[in-house]
Amino acid sequence: MKYLARFQNKMMFLVGFISLYLIFKESTASMLPILIGSVVETLFVKSRFSEISFAVSSGLFVAFLVWFVDIYIQKAIKLRRRKVHIQQWASSLYESARCIHYRLMEFCLGKDYDEITIFGPPRSKTALELNSNQWSKPIEATKIRCEIQAITEISKDFRNSEDVFDDETCILVDKLYRQCKDSDSSLHTTEEFKSHRQFVLARDVVHSVVALLQNPLLHQSWKGHPVHGFEKKIISHNKSKQKASAIFVAP
Image (cartoon, rainbow, N blue to C red):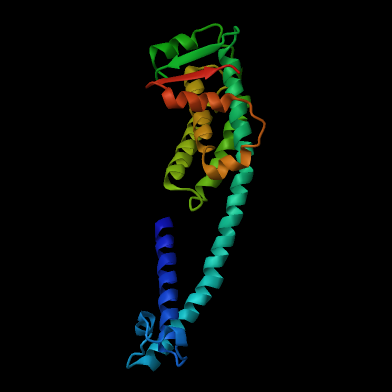
């Protein structure tokens, strides 16, 4: 749909340019003296059907002007408003991700560990070890779930504004929305956040939010936000991480 709209815009501007050219070409206006005898003069030689061409091109140009004023400009204004609206959500998205991150650190660093490395998928051997680890302090699931739901609503709004983002960002928004739904469902029937699966799903949400906020449209609206540092560590890690591993470092 986005590509179709772009193609339509290009075709309409082409029609406007050609019709304007034909209006000057088939009009009764005289050529400027400086252009007489030049190559430009040959481009404006009237055809045998100059009256018909002039009438048709005039009609097309009027249609182009109507489209430009009533449709193109209105869409551009709405697109601008939508961009501003999306930028306003960037700080909220950042704050929710930051809160989730520190809840994860609270979950993992129960005995003042400087860092923890989680390897493997939710059902791996390491996952079972984490689930039985006594220093993994459970926290209230609602504390994380509220932030997950906030990110879900924002990502839903972003999905309805796909014409604002490029294809790569649209794919990332869809991925973030699915991850939020998965994480929310894992917290739906429990009062405590204590399993490795819950940790991994919430962690993936944070990583996707950090990746999404690197989009220039979103980044410029929160780059002046107080730096907490957690997103830099995630970005740095994502550039060098190995398969099936993720690292959270305490600030």
